[in-house]
Length: 202
Image (tube, rainbow, N blue to C red):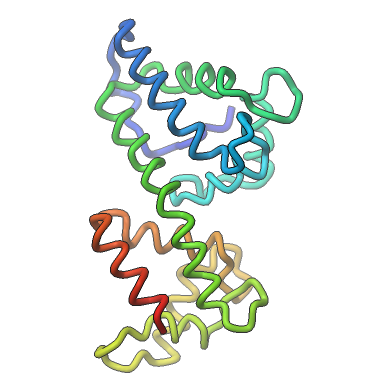
């Protein structure tokens, strides 16, 4: 089986599952489910699951890994993951993980899903030629903050290369979202909002 979030949770941190623990995790997973269910249809379709995997924690997962995982969760094989399927699958998946590790992991997912729309909007603002990709000049413009020293083309190229996970010489939306979330996930909501405002004003 392909682990959904390898390397993010210590499987040595185990604890017996109690009824209270199960109920609490059930509620957390239902909340995450609603965030992934972008169109609020009551079910998660594959594109929605794939969008959630833009998180840095899933960057090693290939498209085929994601297809396999979706099929594992979707026991009814109807192409839509229900709340019950989602909760049941991940209760089992995280069954050996203690509450502290589980909550920390879920908080990261929740933060990513809540900030993803703002980061996608930022990408659309930065993509001046509207071709769905950022080139070196657009990355350079993104990095140039008011009052800071001039960003060189070489600096922009290095940043582009660090974000370009599929090595096509451009930064795609999912790549920007993933990279920016890595850099900003420890910011407070207020600081994050201020940064988005500054970067979107250029």
